[in-house]
Image (cartoon, rainbow, N blue to C red):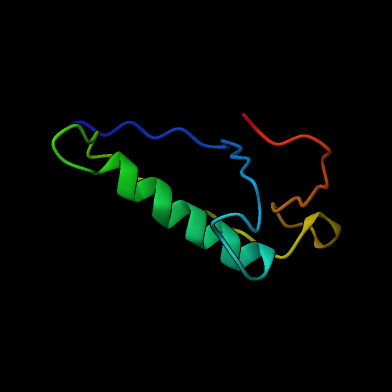
Amino acid sequence: MRVITFRNVAIQFDANQITHGTPLEQVNQAIALINGVLQREPYGFGAQVVRGDLRGGEADGGSIKVEEVAEELT
């Protein structure tokens, strides 16, 4: 099997809609939901999102950014 890996992908999602908890907990929940869709039969890619090094937030050098936006994501 040939595996292709690409890094540094940013995923934005509406927090507190389907996911709940701290930003890190919500990231983990979102990844689990995305993986469920990517692997769903019979149309699944057989792909998965793998969580890299996620630390608290940008202030401490982490890669999770929490923003308040006026409009919902489409």
